[in-house]
Amino acid sequence: MRLYKLTSGVLLEREGNYFLGPELDWDDLLGREHLGQLLLTESAHWTSITEEEAGKVMEDGLLAPMGNQEIWAAGVTYYRSRTARMEESQDAGGADFYDKVYMADRPELFFKATASRVSPPGGIVNIRKDSTWDVPEPELALLISPSGKVQGFTIGNDMSSRSIEGENPLYLPQAKVYQGCAAIGPCILVQEEPLEDSTKISLEIYRDGKMEASGLTTLEQMKRKPQELADWLFRANTFPIGCFLMTGTGIVPDDFTLEEGDQVLISIAGIGTLMNRVGKI
Image (cartoon, rainbow, N blue to C red; front, side):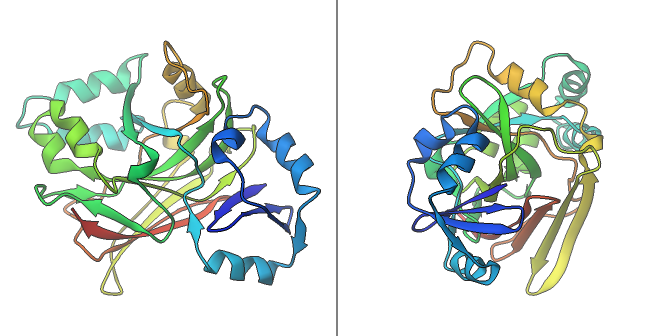
């Protein structure tokens, strides 16, 4: 089932049927265990609407499907990401670190965004004025319960300043964490079963109506499994209202940097498409 956060209320799609519900406390909602069962119970009292009506409701605007949950991220989980990070940090002498992380048991995990820094579907994600090389990173994002169990999936855009991170790996927080540095949506695919390894992730970037860059990968290319990453995140850490974890990218556009006004579309089979425009801050 897919859960959408509307500007007023919620929308649940289940097996081609649509149910319109009231505004919910998303801290409480995503802080529950067994979210899928809870939604099945609650949606029995919601209003059934047609697919056409659901489309019109979503056209009125979607919000990022979250409350005040933190968003974390994992790095160097795809071989392609490992290679790109080694290339960008070569001059700074940090290339070997990324190779070691890719091969290590312990993954790279870092804080990405608070809710106030997250852009909604259709909203503006930012590049930094003090950066010269910026890319979106299309990622599968996990919804993790307070007990550390993966119970949903969404699309994440981990905006990244490669020029700042490449200058020195210690600048990672500045390259990753700033206003408008992330987007998630358009919904949460609520299910406890893992996605198929063949699940496709695609990226398209448009400038003035023309495609400037694109890429495609599958979850099969990801070295670490989602629950494995969640287990590492929950070592010596607690998340009383749950959290989100972006799982890394296997798509890194070569010889490309974002510009203000670009349009970024990230699609994951079974979840949908997350679209954002690019601003500058």
